[in-house]
Image: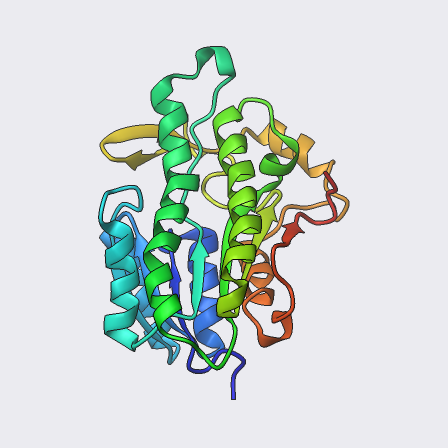
Length: 268
């Protein structure tokens, strides 16, 4: 029997990159997964990939920052699979600049997606978790960043949101311990996704609520960043998913309120 057979998970921001790798890892180990993405096509592609591999998944398309989304996300798990055991708060993006150029909109949007949305999802899950005791430990894994632990120039909004998520994690571990819920965070270092790879063109970006936001890191900066990683290379989405998976296993039932750094040996 696989490690997560019978478990039911929700993963936000799971149509691409790290989120998709997390979904595939959890599903491969027996979990049924609700796949969220802002865009329908990537969400459905992830669901199709899980099903093709013999797993179980459904999509819950939508913006994690929208009012009412959190309740719909949790309800999809309960209605589709009959419960909720694992919550992975992964959705997010970056919108960088130095503080003197940062607008209120940039600040608010990044805090909304990285901190307010996880808060809402966890708040929406609480009534079910309280009312439905489980024989096994349930798991929450919040996705933070080394920027939230040590800061990062040009990312005051992102770093503040990820630091806040660490505080949320540690507090909820104390509130939800009585429900046999382990609440932890993974702080990623340099993981290669579309947000961190060298852009294919000068106008490379993502569309978020009708706004075009540039993504990617210059090849020169990527080379400089690699030199700071003791393992000498960036991580893959699959390696990032492995760190999340560790905190979903029964073997981590006595680990709670912790932040695991998945950064190739980079110490903050």
